[in-house]
Image (cartoon, rainbow, N blue to C red):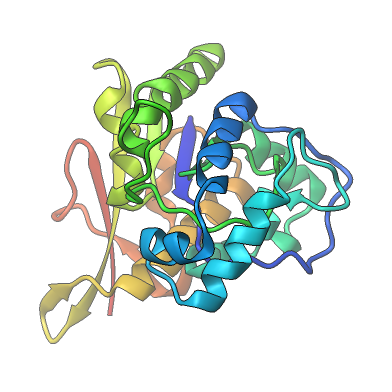
Length: 255
């Protein structure tokens, strides 16, 4: 079983890295994207990334300094570097080395720049979203650029595990770069989190993001490789709800 999580815009490279390090599988493909973005001026990046001038200047500098393969003194393991809400829920800095070894095999982080990352893959600071309309050579956007590459990579890994389950903890922006390209025999389990507000089930985005990270931690700490075992998840007051779930959906409700 593999579970996928979206990368985050927010990063923290001040964290202490771990001894185990790896390089991402799509280094050459990532380098092409970095080269394309390196051609933009700071003002052009501000428009492309929809950020202010200060953030645009920072990322212009980042892409000018981007090198491959990554060196440990200017890079950090992905699972530690990302610092968005989901990764705060995961809190990877407190995971044991044994937990991270399990995550390295079963967790995949979807990235606009790197395609797909293992937790211990080194990354450098960057700002780029999957929906950013950037041309890479003759290809007009990142969805078309990555095309089937991410899906095929995951399929190969699932085959090596003799397993066909993919647990989707990623946002729609990122999961649609993978799931539509998967073979029909891959069983995708979508995880849904809801809040019960006066009898009405609602989605609270920030809570959903945090819960995705909690679920990722739950999978790692409990060494889950069977999708049915996900139903035991009960962190932060969430409970599996059979009535709201389906063949390819597991819904968790709190409140």
